[in-house]
Length: 399
Length: 70
Image (cartoon, rainbow over all chains, first blue to last red; front, top):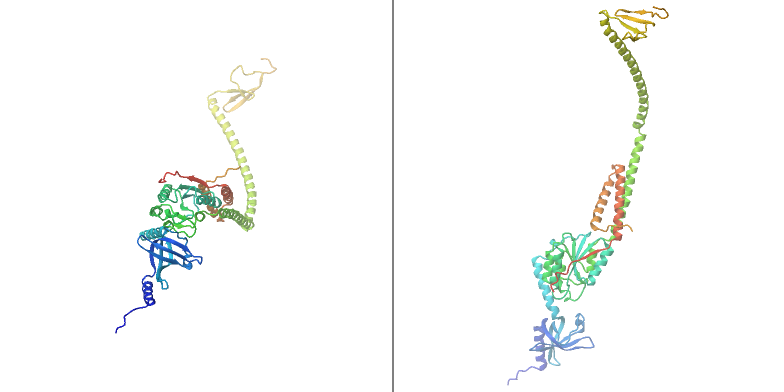
């Protein structure tokens, strides 16, 4: 007689447990939450369902404390977990180790997709990242004109380097059309020939809030900017696609402004250093000159010439005196010679006439040119070519 | 009050000249009269830069919001 083949329920359930638990490990599934019950122990119990089926779920306290939201009945979630079978009740459930909102899940997927795509295209290449000048004249800013981020950047600029000019391209930084608005802002600032750097950014927020900075249109605008760009989105931990494309990432808009401006105090102290150096340089120059002047004055080269000059000045005086004498003597000599020449000329001149038989009459050394001039009573002279005859006038004697 | 030039371009030009003067003054063969002239120029420029640094206020230009897509 053959005994009928059977298994105990326990045996069967054990086999089911083995099969299911081996066969459904780390399954990622999407579903809608229902009957959500957080237990006082911290564990979560609920059902995940879709249009055709449902499954019991649990998530132990140790796992669910890593989830940054609390699911509600009706919300779509993506979970990862493994099937466990509970033999005493003969049921199975999904033991969940990870949970995400599908919204986030979709965005995460989009983020990773775009990151990979642009990365392959070379938009994140470190080789193309440009140096950020830290002594700017003009800083372009793309952000919301009403946001705290903009006010923060203004106050940092005023505190650190108030000479700088900020040019704001006001933009929508979240919601519909934000990415296009940011891209347009970047393009508008690129029209300026003299903007040194552009900061694009906004304050922190949820992934949805920051989404404009994860869009391809923003990424491409950053990539195409002629002017270097600093991406400053959110707080510390948030990374965006524009962070990867930008020439530099700053954790916050405030940090970005600190990055591109020199510290006023440091500039001032550099100026003070310059002024000190100027003084020191001139003093060094002056004392150098003083030393060389002293060396020069005290050198025999200098002392000797002074004596030489003194001696030579005496010689010069003597020479001058001699020159004076020579000149005087020569002048007198010259005068005499001229006078005698004149006399000679004079005498030679009339002698030629006199030799022809003429006589001229002088009285008191004056030529008598007419009979009227001659005072017959006084002495006068007859001048011949070979001598003169003095004629006594008939003064006192009647004629 | 004394008028302070807070123009960044003027500031940068002055700063460049200050750096240049600093180099020129290093030359100990420099004519003393020249050195004193450069010193005066450098001091004046430095003082002007300090003043404009203290007195300046950030200039803000806001572009027209013409590129919003809404």
